[in-house]
Length: 601
Ligand code: F6R
Image 1 (cartoon, helix red, strand yellow):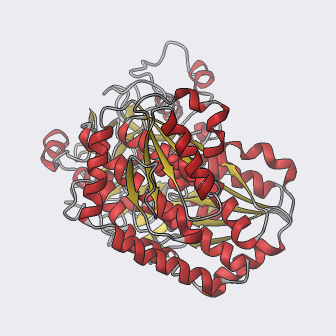
Image 2 (cartoon, rainbow, N blue to C red; image 1 turned 180 degrees about the vertical axis):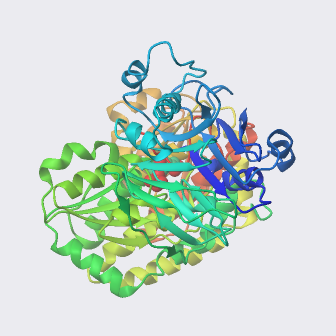
């Protein structure tokens, strides 16, 4: 959440324009407001802050306001402290306007810190927690400290996960401090340096990175002829830390919508190939991971949100395919399981971004108990990948729309493959999933999409949608609800088919839409009975199933994918969510109140 970008370039560089371009690539981290501060040749900081998304902003708007400078910092915000307004947008400034701060995360003790500032000396111009950083560093600099000393001083006091960048116009220096939220340095050509919340910010410009680790600062001196290599400093001790440049051999994938109206539908359609790519893994690595699952004493699969529902499906997949008991847990609740964790526990962490703070905290708990961590992650070089003992890439390519689609099915595919490998049937798993990939490729054709669009028209005005599933499709019903909530702002609720009669059936009335996820497995008969129970109360039953049934008022065909049924069942709901959003006039890529990388608790 919140994206930070810094650029320091050579003489003649247009830093605000570069920062604008890089920030657009991070827009999915937050789109409540944005801002850029530029250090001009007159040594002054000029700022531009606006409410709304940065995506459509033209370079001319920025250069007209900020002129040309070699050094700039930028931010795209997901609001935490303080409402969505220009004055709460970042960069935040100190009282003199000669220090600019951008920040990602939450300063849990900001009220205490605010009270600790020299009384009556500071003018607070915003309601943000971030501004306290500006005034603390301002006090440090006024007392003769260097930027590094002043930034370290406040960094040591902060509680909560965060990252911030301070640009000081007097020294021209930039301090980029990582305290649990990601920040990465990119080393460009001949004196060009970047800092970004994730590599997507600058990967089109350089693939040479230097990782700032937790409780470290990168100090950048822009120099007259281009930025010098940053100095890395341990925040706690003040000592220098050695770093090396790592080349990222990973491409973020096609960035544009390539002919589609929105990233969401583009990414849904990319599932024609991403399922096959997810299981295109090194066999030896998969077998090693399967061996660890077999030998562990206690396996947990952990993720947040959609990834959490995937983990819950994983519990069924391992039971059905490998006859093994694994536990799934929601990342934000994982701390409560700590007493079960030992040095023999394996924690499988599932994430698209690899930056979700709830998940990073969960693996922190696991590691503190000596457990081993295997991550399934989409973003190469992410914190999760780097903090795990082993990792497998999801290979889904950049996922830009906030609602996860292709990363979700990549996660499901890889977990299914791991379950087969754990059962000693890796080849069978691969065959099943490659076959499923082909079936999905066939399924995602214009006629299929049109049939779902027609359903969306019927459901357009509905306030509530229910989704039921059984067995491995029960968590998929819950995931389907998440998809409809965040794309179409509809109140959607997913539950186990068998739970209907224990309460939710009271909500069903004439015309209540209920989607039944019906797989050709041992749950089919009971699922059809549950659909009948809905229909008997006047409900409108939408069947997502390989075969039609008289109980369905509307049937969406999916292939019979056997153990891979969760993959094929969720895709029609993704398409439905997309079309409902479009029909309701909602931008499906950027749901209100949400962001792609959830880096706050
Ligand atoms: C919903 C969605 C979120 C994420 C969750 C975890 O479509 O995308 O629920 O699944 O925030 O994010 P990652 O997978 O990046 O850890």
